[in-house]
Length: 212
Image 1: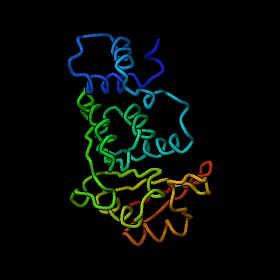
Image 2: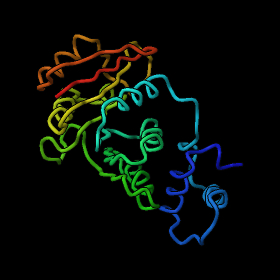
Image 3: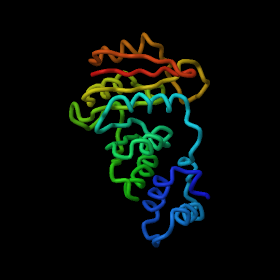
Image 4: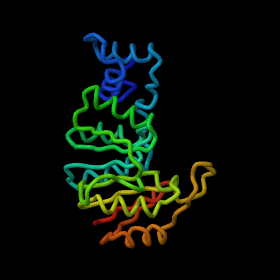
């Protein structure tokens, strides 16, 4: 079936959010209607999870969190597996790109009630201190002109944990303007107020779990 290729519930929600006047159809028919209307559903395809995504999800399973902020959700490379794997978790997603924030909000409008999408700058978050049990900021810092500010904001709005990942090797992506090592990440996170940091190295990426 076509629907088996996708995170079905999320894909159906996205289509319903974008096409709110669809009649009562099966999941298969809703996905087909979305494709026929030209909606870009490839972002919801179930691919073999990237090692860094799989490891980040494994870390989160051990933290027993109630709510989470995902910073820079983008096309949902991490967000969709997160929502699929933690269907009861309250998730707030922020992104600075209006189109991507709108796409994520369509998933909320289509029925994923534990998701909240906000258009927001990672370096200047409009949340009070200690707003979320955990903050994830995965494959984001290397894109930012002020990664220190974004890391400090993540620490500020987290109650318990910040989980981040960055490339550990040059990858020639022109959108990547920083390359981090363990020492620089330690300086950023401890400087922002982290109490402890645990590092893992997963296939050309660094994963850091900071306790706040």
